[in-house]
Image 1 (cartoon, rainbow, N blue to C red):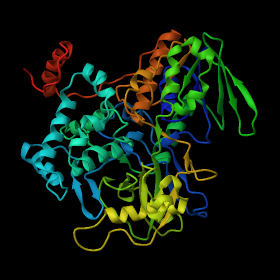
Image 2 (spheres, rainbow, N blue to C red):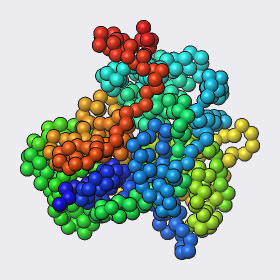
Image 3 (tube, helix red, strand yellow):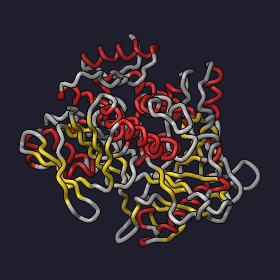
Image 4 (cartoon, rainbow, N blue to C red):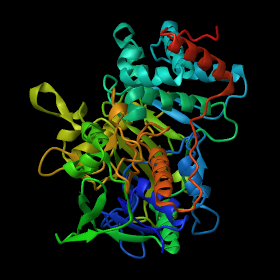
Length: 551
């Protein structure tokens, strides 16, 4: 008889664990609170946006981003059959440009492709830094030095020094220019990791920054990829179909009320239905793939008796920020903006986005909504606590996003977009009138200030010591979520997938099932850097500071 596994949560972590388990012969059941799988990665249909035969407008929690260094989630996508043949990975489209938009100044376009020569790299850097950024040669040189330090420090130094240092301190922000702080301190942390520079740790931000930089020189994989259609139709729904065809059983509308434990092992799970009824679920093994803030209240004294290290989950449960999507449906005419992702580097609400239609060739826009949708602009709001531009608030400060009503959020975001997309010549590419919009339904505006049911875990200073391994000391409980310790080390779809693989590997070992372990890949380190890293290892062992040289 197959070993039974109960997975708590049907987001990317839970689906990834189900995928690996069912392919290895386990009997898998997934409990999911919503009525669809996918978690933060799902897309939704905008309620009341169309009448048959027209199709509802697509909405997202936030746009998707698959950088070149993602390996785990891409590997899984390559093993999901697509509806029209091939695999879901075939629905990944490569971007050709990135844009840094600045308020009151023309945007800067950056090619994300791989430079093939030093002169080409120099041209890329001049494109970025040669514009009217206000950055001095000293600013650029100092930033380059700090990036070199991230690239050539040994893993031990990264873990013990960078993990316990804020990006603000690492970048010596107090002694740098306003432009340096705008671009390299505040701008980078808000747009890359959706956090404040004085809170985010250097190690996590450094992973993203250096991996993106390495991607510029990797000729095998595009630096920036995204899906060629709304997320659920092209990825999540085919994934669910495949898993169900292999025998995975989904129970939707089930909220995990309790993880029951006898002080040694998990004995069952209490699952609450929408009508308030509670049912008990038992299995041989349990995979908790819930977000950190949802998991923390489930850690009981009995679970702590079985594994005292689980107490760390409560210590990091508050390390969550809001990164939420809003879609604008442009009437009649599309505005592509840039063939890639857009970062509004100095916008008050740390906006990032993508103009979707240019990447969605298979979507019939004439059948969406009222038939007059020209394009879809998907924007992520990463800062909900900085005053915006449009609405006066108490104390002479404008309202933050968290203080606004939905329609105020939409108008302020639109205003920030238009002010950040000032062309070198000609009219603003975006129309002055606010188009139809839709905010992620997980954002609640009543009865208090804005709340969000899908928050983003952020690696704050010193948080690694509290983050658990996928394999807990509870013999039949493993963890598969983006706060688990992984090589990826940042709350992303890639981290959730890697955590699920680690959890499944632990479960395989404990269950005694004869199955191959899941593949887990380290982050890429270019060969040319390895002598520098090895030299720093010697310095670290000798108690000496980083030098950035081989000898």
